[in-house]
Length: 385
Image 1 (cartoon, rainbow, N blue to C red):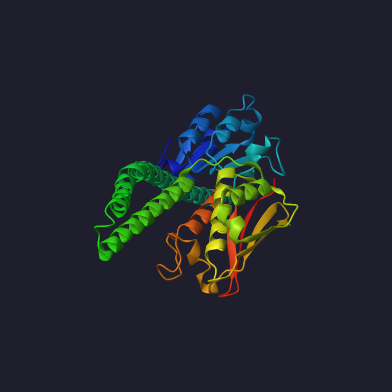
Image 2: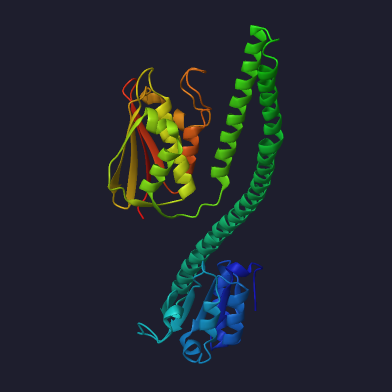
């Protein structure tokens, strides 16, 4: 017997006496509640699986459920569900023997049945069930939002991968297709200056020299952009790297530092977890800047030392260069973040951006302290090996 069409609001009823079931249905129907009378425990469990607001049953059916039908039905409920059970017990009973997961959302009502009390208990159970369905709606909405977000992330990831592929193809084009004509421009200008210098006017020689310098600068800019691109997208395998040999190799690779600069290295220097090529690029760029950005007739002096902080190592590079105002501390690590007038010092404004990106790819950080005309202290912080 079922009244009402909403399964989620209906009360399942399993009582041993047909008259008690009829009285209960009449009382609940008078209160505009939907009821379904079940003939046995199996039918009640099927009703729970199809959907219901609560179940009212006598304790003897629970105690006789040796097959665990009720326990299985409740265990099959979704995570948001705590199905309400109303069990009619003998007078004076405070509890009955039942599995803990069955008793979790159970209310005991003593016999004989008092319809006013029963209606109040049923109303409470149905209100509790409605809140569960509201929770289900919220969870379903969250699930839909999560799926939509995952779909958008997948679409944007695919678009990003496509863009990365296009950028890699562009990088290849820049490396080969653009640098070739630049080298040709530089080479032809050089050949004209050498082979036709007697026939060229001073103005013509100056124009060709400008062409050479512009081609060389643009070629350097392309190389730096490609280096930044390589650092940004390359695979990073971190391993133990001894810093001192890396610094010494860089110093030996340039004649200028040893001839025109004083470099002091405090030892010992601990090993770090790093990508050796990336670390060498960082150190080379910082040392190159320290040698380049000095006042006229000032011999560059560079002091290198390390500090340990828990599981981190900070590599410090202090120089006696021209320095810069503190408000430029962020800008100098950006692409093309030049803060000096164009032409006052050579460079492309990409070197420190490469340092920052390489350090981040190694799980580290970079920083700087500086004041105008008082030098600078750059540092790279990496994990200790």
